[in-house]
Amino acid sequence: MGNLLENRTRCLIVHPGFSDNGFFNYSDVARFVGAKYSATPLGALTVAALFPQHWEFRLVDENVRSLADADLVWADIVLTGGMLTQQKRVLNTIQRGHHHGKAVVVGGPDPTSQPEIYSQADFLVLGEGEVTIPLLIEDIGKGVQSGVYRSDLRADMGEAVIPRFDLVRFADYMRVGIQFSRGCPYNCEFCDIIERFGRTPRTKSAAHMVAELQALYDLGYRGHVDLVDDNLIGDKSKTIEMLQAIGDWSRRHHYPFYFSTEASINLAKEDELLQLMQESDFRYVFVGIESAEEEVLVEAHKVQNRRVSAVDAVRTLASYGMIVNGGFVLGFDSETEHTAKHMVDLIQQTGICSALVSTLTALPNTQLSRRLASEGRLFGGGAMATADGEADVDQTTGGLNFATARPRTAILRDQVNIFRQIYDPVQYYDRILNTATHLVPNRRYRPGFTQSLKLAIGFLRVSATAGLNLRTGPLYWKTLLQVLFKNPRALEAVVSMAALYVHYAKQSAFVIRTLENKIAEIERCGDESYTESIIARFFLGKIGPQAA
Image 1 (cartoon, rainbow, N blue to C red):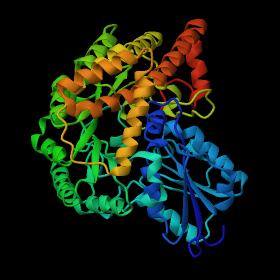
Image 2: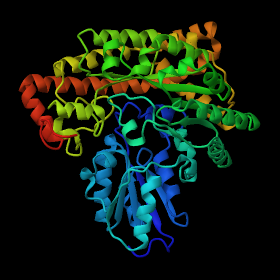
Image 3: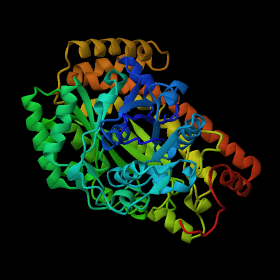
């Protein structure tokens, strides 16, 4: 490789694409406003800031454009990595990099959880990059050609770098991500975040968060900023300090951004936090609701959800101008034949339009995977090798990598029925109206001329797509008129949720088709043979009481 540290090394960072049929792949929605994808690749931008800054960087986000051979020819070294759902494309990048004679560095959540799958990489950088990338850089300076770098230490977020936002073209994306904290104080059994980042949240300073916003501002970005924290309110006192700081900064800069985030449902009980979020123009929050049933929440150790009514929480957040997007999970042992109905009823009552309904996955190195392994129910000891599978793994059609308590076909049929109902256009538009009726927008961000023009064109495109569609047209115009008279300030939200339905209609059809094929295969070959076949296709090892 030569001495990469002394030279102006050309470093290619490849952010692997997600499945075209994934729940969060909002490419169709992005095109309404002239963008190509939903969110910038924050992890890749952060990694770029951790390597020597005299290097020359090129970022290829495969969600925006394809990785070309010319990119690999240009590079001296290739960096890539990602999550389980990106595993196939990470391995493909390793192969292509080697074909062109390039050293490939791999890191990220999935390689950290199951590094054996990525053994082809020249360098494996596991855990938090702030800790292990310096170890790699030191070895590169010594001429080392390969290695595995891991550490049990956790990054000091007080020494965080500012991501290399300059490596992306903002017009390609609907929003830009930044991060405030890592870790979560709760103890959900299925969660791998607390295993990787710990239960004591670590935060950046308020001053650093302001510096990241200033960096975006100086680069000319305006619009949607997403705080990608796993739980924004893990450390409430630090969150208050941060919100006060970005609120003051936003006022001085005439509110160039509006925000979204992810938080536990007990956010609805924190009036001071909600007021600060309202003042900074937070418009969306993703909440892991998981289930409508008390027994399931107990089983999952989801104690925070047992203390708050989901319906009341969603209404409270709406009163502060925030739309709730929700995560729901099927496949817990304590579920019954009534679980699907309870879940549909809850989704309709809350009015949550963006409802991610996935099946339970025992991710590697979680409490759930360890328990299932000890019970002899975990497939392949939890190591999920998806690269030889016939279909991409995504958030909705993967999962159930263990012997289930209820018949597998019953769970899958429940999921099919839930998708058929909640993404039926009548039910979906009922939820739009529900949300818009309770929403109290507090818009601080005002788009400039160019952005206003994009939004106007987007409105026309959504109206043409949803409003002229035989199934959704009458619902779209009726809902617009109802909200115009009941709560006109929520019209923008109505159009946004109608735009999302264009994606969800297509994605739910994919989910239903995929799950029905799975059900037919199980019924054709029997549950035992099907289990053996999916272990062979997707997992390492065999079913049994192996250590996770």
